[in-house]
Every structure is written in structure tokens, then in C-alpha cells.
Length: 153
Image (tube, rainbow, N blue to C red; front, side, top):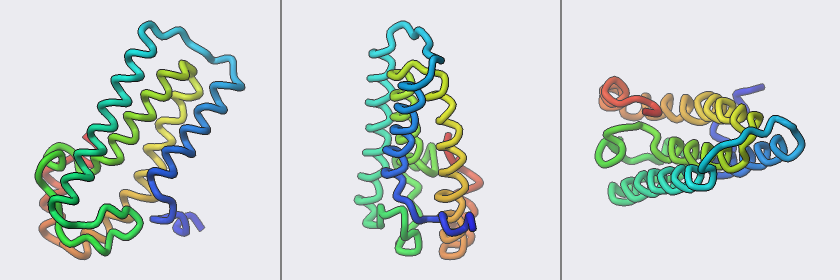
């Protein structure tokens, strides 16, 4: 049953779903916390997260491979340059950082509690299935890349 969710929901849509959950959680709960410099820190996470996503997308375009996360079989090459030297999933890392910014902006413990759920969902239903396809398609090249670069950081 759970396998039906693999590679089905666009990660950007998940960012909006989790953002909405974080908004609901923070709107209807009393677990608000005081965070000094809240707006400044939220803006920093929004900016850094967005820059990391953009770096990932631009590197994929430069290498002329698909950025569509729902069709990893359309990948034409394993990208190991640019931001991909530091993380195998910069776009997902960037999305997570944007959500961290949103949690800071919401200043609510339940909003922060949504972050590990996002990571779990992305690992289970997006990244692991992508890696399965890439491992089959690019075998040793991808295995070597996995050994040298972490999934998130």
C-alpha cells in the first residue's frame, strides 16, 4: 500500500502541504515559543534554502538532465559537480531549509515537529525510490557517488 506513494507526489507540492500543516499546527495550538530575531533568522533560512534549490536546478540544466523528480528513469547522467559535491539532494535540502524558516517564522513547537516528518517522507517515498532507479541505471558510478557524498549533508 505504501509503495503506491513512491515517486507520486511532486516534492514542491509536499513543501506546500507541509507548510500548510505547519501553519495549521501553529494556528490552533498553544505551543508558541519566543524566538529572538525570528524574522531575521526565518529570512536567512528562506534565502539559503532557495539558493540551494536554485543551485541544484541550474546544475541539472547545465548537465542537460531532467529535473523532474517523478521520472528518475529519464536521468541521463549522474551529476556530481557544483552543489552535488556536498549533498546528493540539494533541492530537497533546500526545501527543508525553507520549511525550517517557516517553522521559525511560525514560532511553534508543533511546526518544528513537522520537519522530521518531511525528512522521513522524502527519504521513504522520494529519495530511496530515486536511488533504486539510479542504482539500476548507473550501477557502479552511482554506488561510488553514494559512498562519497551524503544524502542530505
